[in-house]
Image (cartoon, rainbow over all chains, first blue to last red; front, side, top):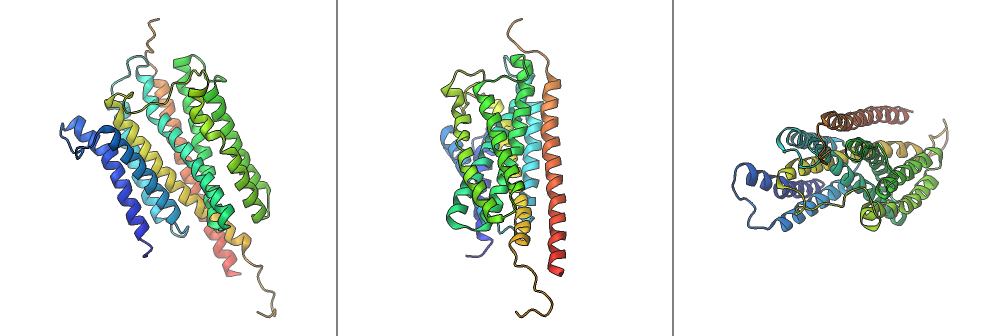
Length: 291
Length: 47
């Protein structure tokens, strides 16, 4: 199969995600036309989410960690989508009934949460694949997705604190959702520290893969914490509980951060791969040594 | 007190500003580290 086929397929899937996730909603709300192909909201949302996730997964798995061109394109597209989402979120969407303008933080906070957990899920998958296949590319991808996941988890905590102050009256509370998110951030930060301290590439890869699988247990706990325990944090929303005018900024930023996240993982994996090549290369031959 | 949050644009600007700043700085560090790693790789190839 030619090398560009996976990129064509994943680009087509991402285009489908943008069409059903954003374009249909925009045309419906602002041009008052129906381009939904007769699909109900639930089906459109499911198609948008699945095609976005599968497209992103193919991009990551097909990347040979050699050329940054695809990563740069994804980041560029992601930035454009985030600009659109920010414009709609700050200037077009109406203020929420009870939280007023402060609710606009949701348009960056929720997409950051989704993509942060997704980046750590990518790390979890890479850890399992590395342990089974022993291919260094998956170790590089794991390191990359942990680092990007940690950046997004850090942003998530900061955005949450900024939103908590005007709505809850405090910057931080040891609420189950916030506590489990903080645990997640520090657990994966610890794995990055572990990778820094271990010099042997094989030990580093195996230990951090196992640690990633263990730390990943916290991801579903973060997600379900608002359902399992009494929490200040609100429950997860869905298209039935989010007003239609909020859909475009939320989805544009979600896809934007997804594209930027995948691009960042690809670039970061290339850095890790270049370093690994140097580390696992055989030592140079001495002058006069037989080949 | 009527249960409705009024104002708060400063919090919104802070949240968006920090998001943009963190993502931009992280992106720049990636570019810098990638260049450095490529240079290091080219040097080790030469020897």
